[in-house]
Image (tube, rainbow, N blue to C red; front, side):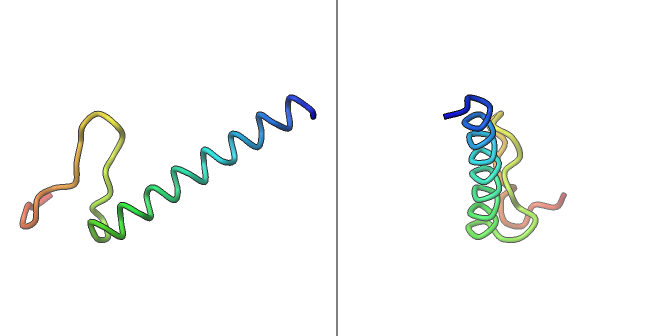
Length: 50
């Protein structure tokens, strides 16, 4: 297999994975409450104004 092709597929998979994660979190927490990044930032508590 072509090395560049493998890298491209891995990149596409990572992008798909992050998009799926965003949809999954949006489904759990509701629209506009998606976790941002991986620095321990979580969606706001219910009733929190942003």
